[in-house]
Amino acid sequence: MQTTEKYITPEGMVITGKFTEEYAAILNPDAVKFLFALHKHFESRRKSVLSARKQVQANIDHGILPTFLPQTVDIRNNDWKCAPEPQDLQDRRVEITGPVERKMIINALNSGAKVFMADFEDSNSPGWDNNIQGQINLKDAINKTITYTNENDKEYQLNETVATLMVRPRGWHLVEKHISVNGDLMSGALVDFGLYFFHNAKQLIANGSGPYFYLPKLENHLESRLWNDIFVYAQNYIGIPKGTIKATVLIETILAPFQLDEILWELKDHSAGLNCGRWDYIFSFIKKFKNVPGYTFPERGQVTMTVPFMRAYTQLVIKTCHRRGVHAMGGMAAQIPIKNNLEENEQALEKVRADKLREVKDGHDGTWVAHPGLVPIAMDVFDQHMKTPNQIESKKREDFICTDKDLLKLPEGTITETGFCMNINVGILYVESWLRGNGAAAIYNLMEDAATAEISRTQVWQWIKTGARLDNGKIITAECYKRIRNEELEKIRAYVGEEAFEKGRFTEATALFDKLVLQEKFTEFLTIPAYELID
Image (tube, rainbow, N blue to C red; front, side, top):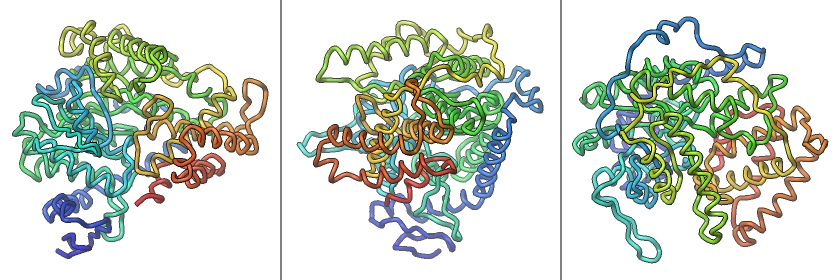
């Protein structure tokens, strides 16, 4: 073992993140050895996964579109089921999500939701303090010792009954720049998963629960297999039974619906179903087909859950999950209660009710909300229309047939100047928030995460690159973008206030947004270059 900035690490492992005694308790020698072992066993496979993604993208660029795999037809056609889900994951009718901030964790666990998904991914800006403090917060929550006192001396603590806890680690594409092994930066996913699992798995079992996860941005069943092998290794490492870990896969890439059965098959001992990650799904579709002629999307506000390709994939998720005996979770309601305008608030809440009504009637077993104020509304809809803990047995959706073309049908619509402006405005606002360490940003009465900014900047990049036309006939060019960007910055200044604008990181956010939308080569994820700008 060697000592690096007071963290004790195996030979070749370096931790450059800030040292505190509290952080050292999370990054203790035994936990660090587990991270080292995960890296040693699985890093080469993670790199292979990312390399395979590039090849698939090259195929799409050359007109080879995704399809259902002929070599796995037996998996799709045979009547197998996933292992049973544990008792505390049977009823998941409303789940709340949010970053691993201390107050958020307490409020979410107390919200009345059935599940809280604590997020190290898209709603978390992954600075060192956010990540390691997040691990401390979750450990304290699991040990029932978490408290928080705000600046007005208001105290927060857990209720007697709280939501079941699930954790979302970072995606395969992100690294943890503060931890390296023999010069290679560690996978952010393995760091997030490893620290949480190592410190909490046995206590969660003692609490009558278990280590439960959400897995983001998987593109195929081989990525699912990699996670399953990690789960088997981790369970053996600390000596708990195989199948103790349960994981829900977010279906938020356009490639994943072609391999739903295969993804569940790979995780069948550890599966807790699938979730429809709507915003990332739209981003993925736009991104993957950005170079295919004729695949220019209308503005994001027109791509709703009722457009054909979104209806196709959500219903296919339900049918597949229920056939395999696991949950099919619905998507996010990102609205925030509007306290200063009752009429606008009721309109926003009515949108939430309609969205959740569609989901429960389609056959979803639960849904997501971003704010505690939406929990009662979503809960009421599901309570009215789902009298059992879930709909796995009652809504098989055998009536639904889905083809390749259904999943890839381009949505109809236009690009308005308002929509173009909104992409620029919201994109810059979110990136600035992210750079300040806040990955869950309240913007125009919606709780935004990285997926929103990803859609915004990807659309602007594509529209400039292809010379798309606004509905008023104007061609979108780099010069057009720069003019409107300057106008939107003045609107942003008025929205946030002069002081917040001057003290914020808007110069850096604008420069990054400019680079992302104006450069010739598309950047796969905005969080990769943005990560270089935070500690």
